[in-house]
Length: 235
Ligand code: GLN
Image (cartoon, rainbow, N blue to C red; front, side, top):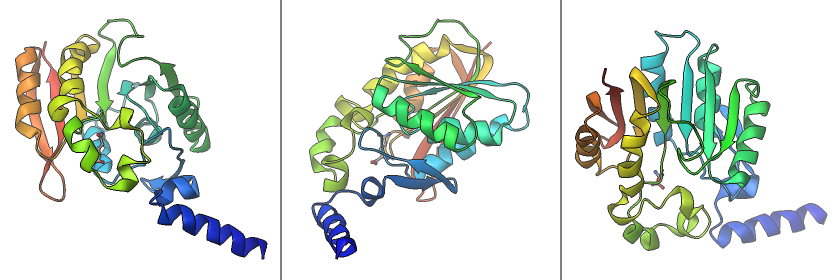
């Protein structure tokens, strides 16, 4: 009887379009388990391409890399990078304390709590502008604010808009970040950023216009859409 009530309750939540990941409180990414709450975006498959792209570039280096993750959310990016790059230390920034709490639990649970440091920061506002990072990785909010009301109810009504809404045209955060990121990357340091399926050219143009990067590239996802922007800090 009790179990049946519980199933009815979970079903009712799903029928109200609550995402399964929030109902379960857990979702998988990179074959690892991650706690998720409504304070964090649910891990998406396209973010695997971001992680893959970063790892391809960073694995050959594999020294004591210093990495920075901007807009950490559930922590999937720093956790996978720390696991795959055993000598790396990762600084993970998010403005949401609720997200950082989830991310810290996920790091601990996946065995990398000692190499991922969590810092409450509104993008780069809370850290020193010194060129100390070998790479910056980010899945920033990049959805056009005008497209937000038309998102599927699971996303629109349950996931944190803070993690999705990229302002007018979806590129406001990326436009602001491209200059600031250059200030914390070592010369030759790399940037890896997830972008929207229609933002390849505009995002690449923003990074080119910042005047501080070379080797700017856009990688397509398995649906053939531009999805990951790569750039190298010049110098
Ligand atoms: N890819 C996500 C979506 O379409 C957006 C993630 C983001 O804005 N970073 O829901």
